[in-house]
Image (cartoon, rainbow, N blue to C red):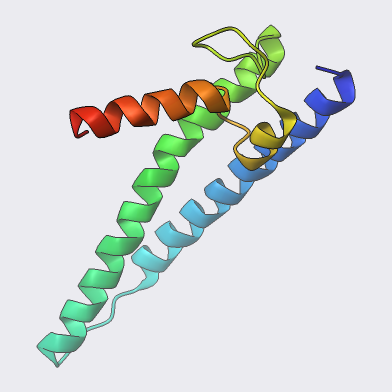
Length: 120
């Protein structure tokens, strides 16, 4: 992979990481500042449901942070863009769609087929 491609993906991954961290900070601020008291139990239930949904999203993003950091490490180690299953290059188009991927499209398709057969 060319140096300008690696630079592009590093900047993309760093931008994704920054976005996730900003959302996390905003969520923390919203939840600590929100001292609302609800007279109506339905309003409270709605607020609790919204809060739980937001926390589930942030938990998924927390897991994504690890994958982003691992991708940045692969850039630094010279392993970025190489399929961890077969060792072939991962296409630029696939990396643009999901820059933290570790599998080429063929290996990912095979993995998904195997999961469907097992019922995962």
